Amino acid sequence: MPTAPKPATPTIAAQQQAVRDTLPFSDRQDFEDATRGLVARRTPNAVPNAAGDVVWDNDTYAFLDGEAPDTVNPSLWRQSQLSAVEGLFEVVPGIYQVRGMDLSNTTIIEGDTGVIVIDTLLSNETGAAALALYREHRGDRPVSAIIYTHSHADHFGGTKGFVSQEDVDSGRVRIFAPEGFLEHAVSENVYAGVAMNRRAAYMYGAALARGPQGQVGAGLGQTISTGEVSLIEPTDLVSTTGHEEVVDGVRLVFQMAPGTEAPAEMLIYLPDFHALCAAEDATHTLHNLLTLRGAVVRDPHAWAHYLTETIDLFGGDVEVVFASHHWPTWGRERVVTFLQNQRDIYAYLHDQTLRLLNKGLTGPEIAEEITLPPALENAWNARGYYGSVSHNVKAIYQRYLGWFDGNPAHLWEHTPVERAKRYAKLAGGVDALVTNAREAFDAGDFRWAAEAANHAVFAEPDHAAARELLADTYEQLGYGSENGTWRDFYLSGATELRDGQFGTPTETNAPDVIANLSPEMLFDALAIQVNGPAAWDVTVAIDVVVSDTDQRYRVWLTNGVLSYSAAPQQGDADATITSRRAALPALAAGNPEALAAAGIEVTGDATALGRLTAVLDPGDKNFSIVTP
Image (cartoon, rainbow, N blue to C red; front, side, top):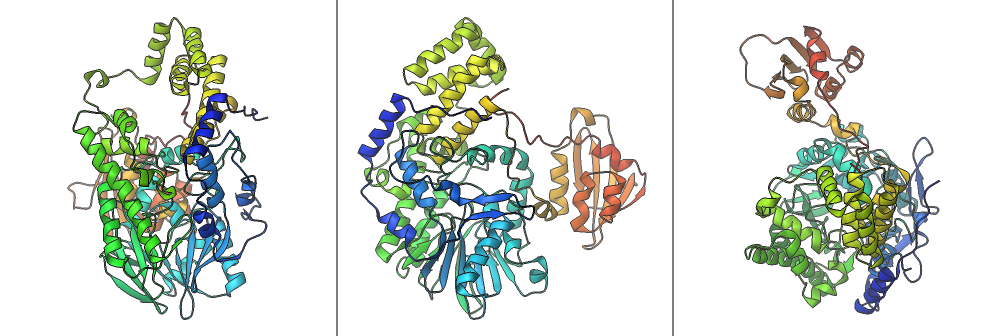
């Protein structure tokens, strides 16, 4: 049985009351906007997969009613109430959104004969359910085109819930995406995919119980679905701002915004509707500059610049803005103010971090120093429900100066376990360290309690009192967090300390994603799995012939490094592999049965591929986070 959660301490209860007394909770405009245009709700809103397992259930958030309990930050409670609003909504006549069906939204634009779908949710199952809800109330219109606004999985993963590969291959359906989409979509979910997916389980609280003492939402949406992730390669890449298309009678004007919320991202203006799709560059939260699951640090300076460009391009004509998450904003003046607030929060954090950085402050110091202007502090759409001022400032510092803060003491620190052992010795043993942490907990100094108890757990992982205290501390920090992903991280840590590891509920490095690896990206993905020391004395050379694209590569393993080249090479390879591009990922399996099943032909030394795959060391989907 899962361990029962504990109540909020007086310290946290007092903090929650201070939030109620400080923020403008009397402002109910967002609630009007989030429910405006409701056409119908899906009842019940639980989505199963083919095996009958539930992959999405928004009904589990029915508890989000009334005033926030002491175990949830009132500001996050408010955001979760808004994000949990579900159904099919009319944005304006001809533009519809399905919200509350996954972490993200899907938007459906009615054309002359069919519909254009902007973003497809994360899973095929939720995508299909969203389309079915639309068709139930608006008619069985065919899908004419799909637009991926950017390269994150919750915006393309449900594609096969809307269309099939055959629909695209036949030309019946076009798929638009920003230039660089496929490379970034695939590389992010494959290269560091195992680690990102494991950390995403913490970030979205996917394994946590729903409720006032558990998962209440992730700030950007409620959580991620756990169905099948798909990907169909785009047919049309957009590369320039101002590029226009007319698709099924609908005029589309694109604005490129690379390096903002995603490495490949674009906004879309629909002039005939006076409507702007802001993708994920303007939502009702301060977004991440470095997501807690891990990613390349985003560029807040460019982000702010592109939002200024958005206002310049469309601000004089726009009447509504909608995005890939949250609810729309209507009215030209309100839309422009919304975009300005979103721009200003990223610009302010960037500029002030650089100002203080150049005075010698480090990332953690700047995070404690920065105070937002009152207009941003009190703007609900700029609050840190998903990104936070604290971790975004540290991300900006990292972007410019890296991990090292310049203090020589931090240049060559011991590993966490070795530091923990020395802290325990300094404190007079693990028991004394736990006592110190307990004193901090009782005093309401949860930040120090977490640090001290964490050292105790890393010094002695089986110390029951240390684990219990650390779990209790994480729980209180979670209760107090305004940021949804911080709450999920803290409560996930508490859960694993108490009840064991829950692994990775959702994996975005799915077969469809891997199948879209180019040969070069596949070789890179294999290279990062090579166990260097085990491969020091292994030498292999393999020619890879891609039969359906007329590409040829020499792949070789020397000195523990897997390299490749498309240039002609001297000498003979140990073996030659001939394969269609889509079948190439089967090389990682290495066994003859898998190769034969994929239609891969091997000539030459039959042991060559086996010698390579023998030194591959795949990632661990259940690696430890809160213990050594």
